[in-house]
Image (cartoon, rainbow, N blue to C red; front, side):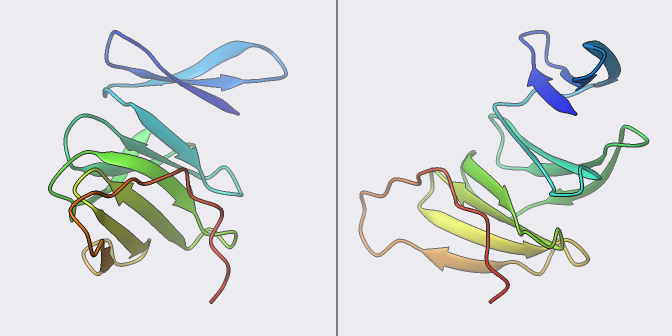
Length: 124
């Protein structure tokens, strides 16, 4: 499965074997990340909300609210039960997928902070 973010404020979900668009999600995005099992797609755009999509249904599953600025990095845990997001506000949130409101928040200690693409999360 391949995901693309388009200028028309949609996300396309494509089957790489057929090069056919299977599903269109009605949202703008600047960042996309698949879970390891491809069941979930996380999207982030110019707002501070991160949306978790069910790839099979094309429906939003959860909204992750915790950043005060747009996300600049997204990564799922290898087990697929967590999501990590970095933001331009200098925070990194670690979200359990079962409790999107219960993020662990790490905050930068200086005014200047850059979030680089995140490596997959280890179990601990």
